[in-house]
Amino acid sequence: MLKKMKKEVELLVAQAVKKLPDSLQTSTCEQVTAYLTKLDEQAIQYPDEKAFYENLVHAFALSQFLVVNADKYPQFLVHLYLSKRLFISATKVDYAADFRGALHPQDDEAIIMRKLRELRTKIFMRICMRDILGLADLQETVTDLSNFADVCIDATTQWLYQKLADEYGYPTNDRNLKQELLVIAVGKLGMSELNFSSDVDLVFCYPSLGMTNGDNAISNERFFTLLVQRLVQVLSANTEYGFVFRVDLRLRPYGTQGTLVLTFDALQKYYRDAGRDWERFALAKARVISGEFRREDLLKIIYEFVYRPYLDFSVIEALANMQVMIHREIIAHNDDIKRGIGGIREIEFIVQVFQLIHGGKYAWLKDTSLLAMLPKFSQYNLLTAKVVAYILKAYKFLRTIEHRLQQYRDQQTQLLPKEEVDQTRLAFALNYSSYDDFLVELKTIRKKVHAHFDNVIMLPTKAPETAIVTSDDSFIKAFLEKRDEQLAQDLLVSLGYQ
Image (tube, rainbow, N blue to C red; front, side):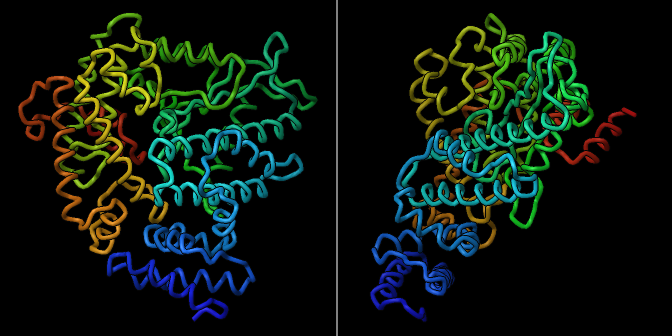
């Protein structure tokens, strides 16, 4: 029993809890009561409005991430509600102001790491609450997450850049012009559609070779390598305060064997001489999120590699190989809403097929956001309006499921739950009366998505699961999948490579 809780508050909590499925009521009531007790113990004033308790109960029932962090920062949820920030959309300008207030030149890296993690936790709590409570739609949620990541990575890069410049001087080119690091986001962040617990896939480069202009001068290559190493450490190290983002650098030229950061010339040479079709596929999602100096030159290098100034049917064979590979993984990942049959990856593939074939002709296909591009497909007769509407609906449905799965424990997962209570929670989060009802609709949607996926490029095989896996297929798979390094090495050895 709460020390200071009024009977009316107890009643409001009890009424809100009764709206939950039976299997969620007891644990949620205990968690809400424990939280309100903590507010009492710390003399934190909380509202006695019915909506506050309804929101609290609903959110705690669906997200252990919120429960755990409400205990760490008990005043924050009350502040969100009373300040009305819970009910207002945030912008990049808002996040930039947050970082200006948090990152100070006199701080050391340990202090910055703590501040970044606390800021990330609180902002993700707000985004999670808005999404779960239906205060933000999918478009706003993924944009919000991406905007925060953009500003966070850029602000941290600039802070670390200045620290290194204080020590070594500023990196310059042969005309004594200051050089800066340019950060390219690919994957979900490149699409501006980051999910709730996603890696951020990054590629780093800088304009040209040279030396820093300080007394303790070092090469630009050394300067920017140190900068990338520190940036990755500051963002991804898992401390007592958690992490900010898991940073994945494996999509850079030459993968894990390549240098962390390249000059523009080296990047252009690689894509011209050694770039693979799957890299074109990945870089169709590329977006520069930090660095301004010669940004347009960098985008030109990327676009010249990814897109052709004509209808590019030469890429169809490579796309067909990727499509076959996706087919062959479906059986193993059928409970995975990303990689399973009719999953998120199949929808992304549909869109990127048209990007790579027609991107040189239609400038709008160089946009990286699937949600922004897909509605235009019917306008340009790439797909019928009916097909576009269905695929868009399916994508939003699957991405919403993905968020509900990840918002529960802030874990990167796309797997449907096995435990009955978790299945009940997911069905309730998606407004289904039962998990079975949810599965019926999910199966229908995935079946139709898969049919559209099959129709994008006509496969030469009748049954992908019985097709022979060739060395080339396995080789492509090794580079497309994010694997443990040892597993990738074993695969290459099995193909005859030393």
